[in-house]
Image (cartoon, rainbow, N blue to C red):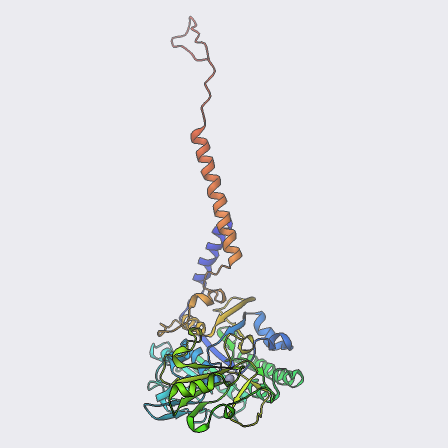
Length: 450
Ligand SMILES: [Zn+2]
């Protein structure tokens, strides 16, 4: 019983200690940081960051496991079919518009959702700031972050950090939410493949030094003890090879279809009869699945949007869909989001987070409600669950399964004991009192019981 009370008391105390709503948050993404890089490589700065905060070993990201879709999922809490950024390359048949990583600034594509930087400003909690996060230089629903940089991959990480820290330090207006993006280790993962440990070690050590630089800048500016920081990523990386090509030209003529998005999830817009195109593609290669849009498995949450094309091809892990071209990379992502190789990690520290705690898994749609909670924002409709991140948060009562079972058994034992005591005491037969002879003494006025 005492352990139950102590846990309850600790929960209440923790809740009182944190005042969600006046805190600040910096969200950082290192593109393509696969979850197991943390175990494979020595990353002392990141380890130091984690020791004082929380680590989620695997983040279940959203299908398709590509950069733009998953970065927009993190900041909206929506599956791709709901936020509308369903691929890095898209075509909208009604509007006759195309979207690519190099042609991404039309708000049309982004307006199906409201990202957290806009909500933060709309609800008056403070200004938002952004360094290169996808979508932050677009006027989404007529709003950009109050401070942002136009996307330019040649701007150094250090320069991005200097800007973000300066914005976070400005007092008028107070910046309560900021995002920061860096292109590595994704670029090198594509180039060398994730299994090239020699080259990937060099890249990961550089990423770790950059995390160290960010930490030192936040410490020097006096923000370190008060700001909440999340470091995460959009997806992992799988090795691919010239020997694992799925060649569409061997199965279907190019005049039958338009290839809107390529590999490893290809979006196919048929020019001829849809069923005919589908029948040619579905038996094309045993390492590729073809789905009619209406047959896409529910677990992908990837069908209810007109930007998802009528036929989707999904390659098996490590396989590449091409028309006939050669392969110029050794790593890729975009595959089934159930594959561990596609999962990133999440680490976080600051007053809102528990310290020294490791959690096995969350979904990336859960990050949004957690961030809204930390910032004291009323979230937009989303697909995440705040309860999935409760164990990461200092102001939430979190209990794991073994503890829960222990408490239930303990409570049961205590209740049973009490019940037994009550039943026994009620049924107890009062033994007859020993007979005592009444003796009257001559000098007594009243009889005495001996
Ligand atoms: Zn990416």
